Length: 136
Image 1 (tube, rainbow, N blue to C red):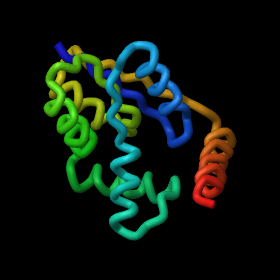
Image 2 (image 1 turned 30 degrees about the horizontal axis):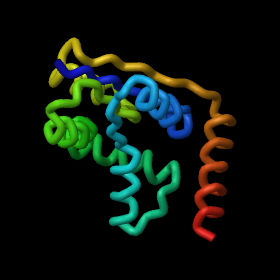
Image 3 (image 1 turned 45 degrees about the vertical axis):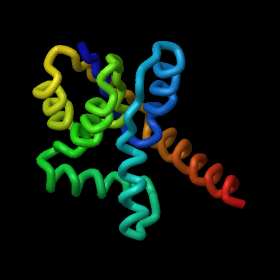
Image 4 (image 1 turned 180 degrees about the horizontal axis):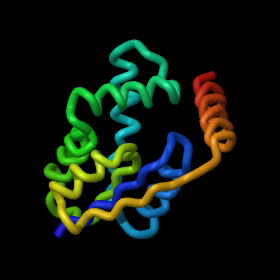
């Protein structure tokens, strides 16, 4: 039986940190929509800014009726049938969660993470500085 844990929250709210610990301590297999969106930004020649990632996700929500996160996750889940504990680190809308529940039923748990806006901005800006430093 598959167990699917969905983490939601703003970009830089701590989803990746929580996800990394769940993978490390409890053996979850992680699927990240953030990586998917960043790849799409690159394909479109866009910078992977917080706003661009959110806008791209919103656009995909409209075009796919909120199905794109489950499409991204389902590909990994179907390719790895022996893995039972799955973690998706960034659902953003209730309809996305509902789509997972429609597909996987009671095996879905949704947890939403919160952080104040000033903390979110500082964390994201810190990431950008860190990434820029790593490129040099």
